[in-house]
Amino acid sequence: AARDRSPCRGGLCAARTPDLAPRSTAMRLGCALLASLGWVFTSPAWARSVVARDPVEIAQPNVASDSMKASAAIDAYFDASAKRDEAWTKVAESNNRSRGSYGMHLHNLLRAQNATLEALDHAASLQGAVVEAANSDKTAAETHYGDKETALSEGRTGADFNAEAAELKASMQVS
Image 1 (cartoon, one colour):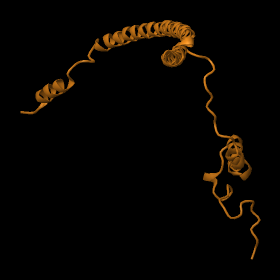
Image 2: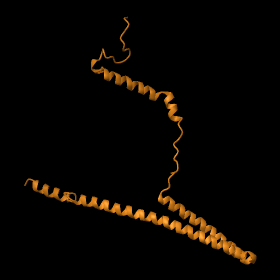
Image 3: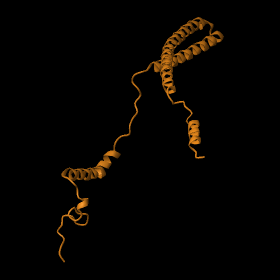
Image 4: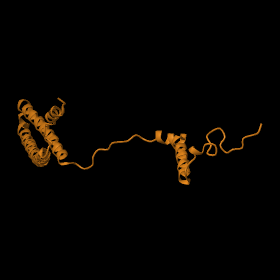
């Protein structure tokens, strides 16, 4: 038996099937490139590098927005309020247990109340700025979408097409 010496053993060959042959050099190069990329992306080394990567870590934002500042100020107010409540508890206890320290505890209560009021003023000013920004954004959005609604109502956008279709169907019927 004569041995087949064609370069295309066991598959389709351009010499045997000319309609399946690559049409140009660019196409042959493109096929070779795709074949090599297929080998690269299915190789075990590439698969290991994909699997071995660390998972994505989501980092905290490092720039505080106005609302974040206002929220932190409100938390600071709550902390100052808790310290004021603790100072009041000590005043009540000193009134019953040790009258000598009553004045000192009243002074501490006054300082805690002042700190609470300062924290509240700071939180209120930051919250006011956030509310103003939100209101201006709301007004801008209402204007923007009002203009869009006006633009949509022009022309035949709001026409009753079902009624027009029924009228046209009635006029086209053969009697």
